[in-house]
Amino acid sequence: MVTSHHQGSLPSWLEKLWTTVSHTLASSPRPLESSASDPLPLVVEAITPAWLSKILNTKVETLRLQEVIHGSASKVLIEVIYTKSRNAPPTRLCVKGGFNPQLLEMLPMLFGVYRLEAQFYHHIAPQIPGLYLLPSYWAGVDHPSGKGQGIVVLKDVKAEGYTFGDPLRTWPVERVRAALSQLATLHASTWGAKQADLPWVPREFGMRDVITGMMSPESWDARFADPAVRPPISEIFWDDRQRMVKCLETLWATTDERMVCMVHGDTQVGNTFIDTNGQPGFLDWQCIHVNSAAHDVTYFMTGALTVEDRREHERSLYGFYLSELHRAGGPKFEVEDVWDEYRKYQMQGFAWALAGPMMQPKEVVDAISQRHCVAILDHQSIELLESLV
Image (cartoon, rainbow, N blue to C red):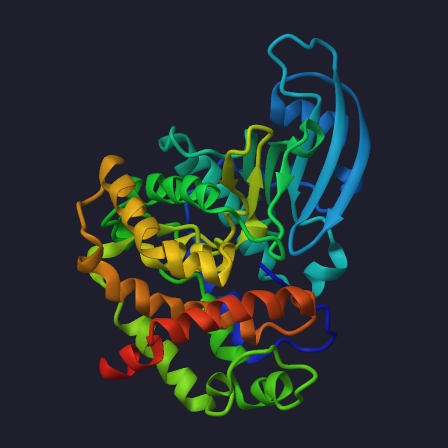
């Protein structure tokens, strides 16, 4: 999830996203909802021993602030001393939520993604024992009368030597296989889910509105008119805006209903962790929504591998994912049964080329855009989508 720090009124597509998120989550079941008289903290200073003692149900004697990392969400890393250490959570914790008042004043819709991640850890995570997640110790959201905060308390695995995925560093094939097994476990758990089954999970979470907004004529010109600004991708991607808009609209309108489930939604390498044994997992569950499983698989695999490794191994890796999906309780597909869905969903990676420097560093955008756009050309995704109109 990325944010802009520009001042002024919100673009219409961000207003629409905020409306979508608010409407979807307003009547949702709330995990461990705070009381109206005791709202959740909104600033780092409000994360106190007293508050932690209450939510963790363990007396916290003192806490020491280690680091504050502000992004679209804030991660507050703390060291905690408990009165009694027996059965207490770890001493190193990460409190994740909205603790950047300046950002949230400009982009209040971000409260929606904080709540959504808390909903995930409360509703979904406990139901999927095979899903490798950062250990969590509490997840909660504000009372409806509050600001709409959502907070998750996680283990600070950075202190234990875990590393986090870097989009500039591609992955070896075997690590990609391990991560695909995780996605299969996630997808199988909600395979064929209808919206009524997951009332608090949005169908698209408004991300399509975000992408559509980034393809407005004004945004398009700002992104692609200057050769020094646009990413190093083929001219086919930026010389005909309407063609790209139509391709994405067709992608979204032709999802294979056989492959619908709850997806992570943002499976780029930057949203992964790797433990000290080399085992990967996914984090930042802020964009979960109902979609084709191919969304997660293509977005992750194409962004994680070098172009050469992807070309050589993608079919076997996709087959491995499908076998893992069946093993985890999902349906049995052969690669050819759903290969066109894989080809189509390469198009989703074009969103990286739309991301300006206020969203991600240019070197990251350029590298990931190249990987995705080459895959789109390799799979003739544009032509496939145009044939479906």
